[in-house]
Length: 428
Image 1 (cartoon, rainbow, N blue to C red):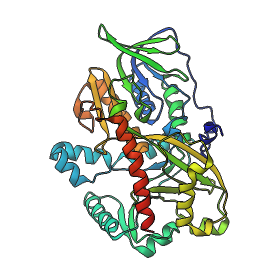
Image 2: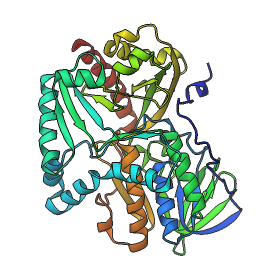
Image 3: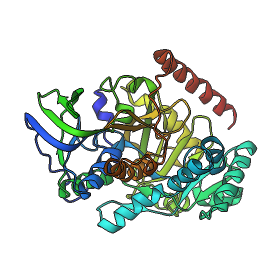
Image 4: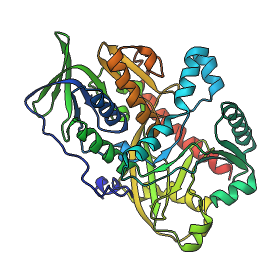
């Protein structure tokens, strides 16, 4: 079966025209070139254009075809690590700025949707981190303590509460973060493109950047179609889809495939029992699964899949098994959509900001929080491009550090996923 069949997510496109693509000319000038038309690239372009910069976005495919249009649409603030770890790791001043930034990343998404009246289905009723072991439940209690200290609207859930809120089996409790929510990610990235275009950003689709060089204080971006764009600043917003354009960047990341399935619309009884208040859920398993309901009442469930490009419906069987483990009453329900996208993992599970040469800026590594993180980071990038002040950036600028034996690391990750999935299966 053609793998492209498995790149059609369940998400609805906006009703209004989204992307007014502007064909790349043979030679162009701009203040800023953004390579990559996902959340990070379009948010940066939008905010930079609203500061008066001339901006060109170069997207290798079509807007929404990459991870930004293929993800689960969970908008989760914070990072993998909690505030006290950030303070210990980065020091009080930088750690506090980073914690303050990360706790408001979901605001960047929902505030933009509301302020601009975007045609994006959304629901901000929170995110549940579901605990299936006593160890995970203790970790949830510690996370709750740290964020409650900072005033977060969050609470612990006991086994009865999480069963009621999710309708799922097998959880001992969990943590509800009401700052979070869900959106239609495809509609959001397409609406971001529309906003950027209306702000004057020129967006080229189907143009792959193939060359990058600096000459006389200007960056020259060359494309496969023979075009050249010259600009003072270039932002590389390719994340898990990074290639050899920036030496070492792709080898500093481990790309993973994130697989998802969507059921047929749930029967009325199950609509009332499963996620009846609209929360998103991620569980505590080593190879976690995450799920939510779509605006048209389907259960959407995702998780890590095989490292190779999937080619058969059976490649999603592990998700169908997880679905029935959690919701045995859905036995026999049709799976009507299967798709996958690519995400990037860093060695330390933190996002990284790099500027290997002046005017060449990039961020990579979302660790499952890319919707809010990269949308919020776009404004900070625009502030930095305007001011040159590194304190406008939430993370310190760090050098690109390729992972030693990168190809073997990917093989090791694939083996680790298989091993962890087996251990998870023993903890039913």
